Image (cartoon, rainbow, N blue to C red):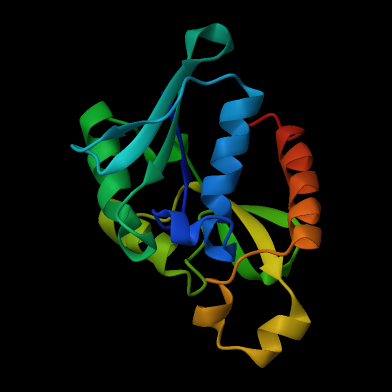
Length: 176
């Protein structure tokens, strides 16, 4: 079983904000690969959707509902229950240091100041998992506003258009 986690914050007020790009990407993966609707599982404090891929392997999409800084709680409880190893974990999240419309993948890297990733690393006691870091940087805005306020701002229409191109690039990686 592979676990793909999108990081974000629950609630309507956080939809389409920069910090919720992980949720947005998970929703897109769900759509592209015809996953069933998300269901809330209170045991894991997460919205979850499961599907079988080729070769009978299971892929689980998980959106923690614990708020960003406590994402590790959901991830750890799910991994422990299903005995998922870190090498079968992919975490998708925003990255303020990467230009909007770009992404980077990494493995076995620190949190780089991202509190959601730091909490996952702390809770599962390793950083040896794959991360897909989605760029949200907008130099003009970012230099005029505190980073913690910047990540909570909603994307503009033009920014959302740029983001839609990122999913096609990630899909071509064939990691799902």
